[in-house]
Length: 473
Image (cartoon, rainbow, N blue to C red; front, side, top):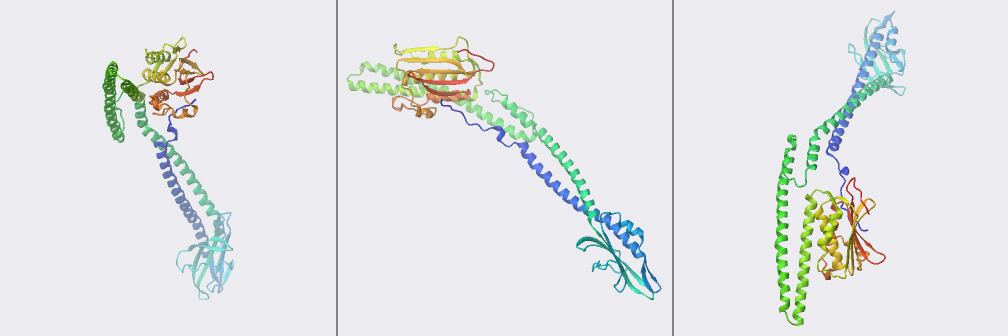
């Protein structure tokens, strides 16, 4: 069975406006969080350095106060309190050195070199970065001016401390800030998401209002929307107004065309039939027969073109309702079987005893069935035509079967396209199956073909049953 299904783009695959806003706002929040964390790291390091530098300066000043000249010699008494201050950073190592005015080491580590920019007499202690023993340290250098007659000059005290404690403090402060920033970012993102959903609620409401509208309702949309959506609603209303005018014009055109074209064709056909007794000779009769055949082809093509235009129009504007497929098919069967059909042709209609309810447009369905029957009568029927309504596998089906040769299987994929025909030289327009296929697609169904093993060809139109509806077969 050949199926024809319209390609549809799923709405779930399209990026939403809310997701776009959230993506951009999330990127801004993330960038802000990175900036805040970076700034917090630098501030935490500065705070840790400032706190431990105060301890370092206090210790070096206490050591400097312990310098004294006794019996013409420079002595130093290292206060315990200075080491207690430095001991507050228990995981760090401490180095110190006391240098006399001659540059000799009185006590401490000889390899602890003071920085070259050590302050002069009277300056505050110098605190700077350095290295000792291959490890980064923080140094404090204090100077003291000696004015004793025995010893004169400047003595210096150097105290160094490793940086583990201050780095741990900076890391702890930074982690606290990171936690706070993470909480604030989560609150900001959540609040922003809720705010965006609330702000976009009028857009969803406007879409629901449009979706609830009857297809025939092309009046202006009147809904309360924010000022920013006013131009959008205005454009929709302007478009609906133009569409209303176009639809009205199309309806009038179809009605006028059906009347203005069919009437002259009928009159012309009658006039040509009246000419037949007046035409003499085989040549004249042959030409008259050709004119009659071409006129019938023109009438058939015109009717199918108008039928196709009507089907397309109704598919866009008519709302589907519950209809009895048996009744629709029976009406199409009666209208499509001509009175002048050959009496030797066996024509039958078979349907369940109770209604088969489907959601559909009865006018379009009747046109689809009539086109399938007309195609069978024109190109297929030799001595038998059967029209059936059946319910199979939870779906309703209309089957039009004839005993003709049918359509070759290799041509089936093309027969649902407009103007595709295997009988181009035999009055075929290529619109009958296209009309039926479009009607079935609009009803959630499909049109297909099947070859009967005992001989014959079947056109099958299937569509879903109406909800909570059963059927008999």
